[in-house]
Amino acid sequence: MMPFSSSKRKFRITGILTNRPCCDSCLKRGSPVKERPTLTPAEPPPPEWSSFLRGIFIGNNGLRARWSLPIFLVLFLALTFGFDIINHNLHLYKESGLSNAAEVPAAKAYIECSAAFLAALLATWVMSKIERRPISIYGLGGKRKIRLFLTGLGCGVVCYLLLGLALWSSGLMVLDGRLLFGGDVLRYGTIWLFGFLTCGLSYEYFFRGYLQYTLTRGLSGFCQQALKTRHSAALGFWIAAAITSLLFAFLSMMPGEPPMASVSLGLFGMVACLSLWRTGCLWWVIGFHMAWDWTQSFLFGAADSGEKVQHRLLATHPAGSPILSGGTTGPECSIFIVPTLALVVLIIFFALPRSRYGEMPDRP
Image (cartoon, rainbow, N blue to C red; front, side, top):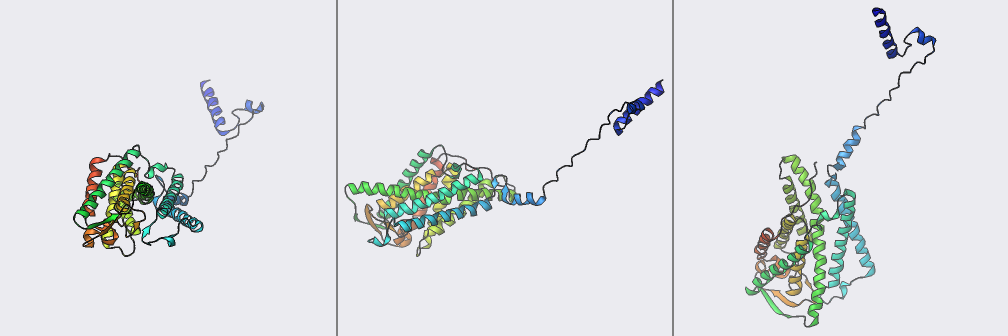
């Protein structure tokens, strides 16, 4: 019995595996035969070219910097062009009515700087939606906004006062007299204070906002890939700072200005980036830029890039060598700007709180 039973059990297993009746009795009873399950073929893998194209446009941190920057610049230029058309059609201010073509009216400063800041803000907002990042990360975030802004205001006034008093005491700046009296001092002082706020916002947010952040993101990834160093974030930031500072100096230069003007503008750009690296935001340098321009243009009545503002408090003019006094371009072209900016660097290092700038870099 044992050989027969073993053979029958073996036959049943064989029948199950081969989808045949296991014995004659099963065949006579008409037992249904189970069909072999059909295997669904696996979906073909996605073509390699699609992942290749995705790698060109998308990195570890979203859209790559090499594509983000052109999109941002196109948006900014388009918005600026649109605002210029609106200003031209509405005739918001007329330069032909000025008594002195070299004097800048408050309306011009407000409109041009506000339009530039609004264009940069809108372009940055669009890019933040595309890249899925909070807009605050591009320079206007931080927990100490008011404190840093007010500190920057104070530093801007004090640092320019030191520069102006040094030029005046050495005979390189001559005081011609007072132009405003009574209530006009408070009126125009307030008008120009907010006017230079728009200037500080527009310049700092365009050059050291999204532009600085995205250049840092792309260059940090390149340095990380090429140099394999843990300092890739710092290298990327300072290479980007040099680029934005050179761009700031080039675009802020007026025709006929001496080479010292580009040097001082470039140095100021690097100092502004230092404050951004130190604090993680732009609020300190916005306040500093605002107060510096107000003290120079309204309080001292000095030229800024060869232009003076209307309704300034004092009337002054340069004397002596242009390399020392700054000449008709303004005190910012004086050689004394170098020790003044060195003082600002010390203030940034020893007086400002340290914070982290930016996020992780892109990988190329």
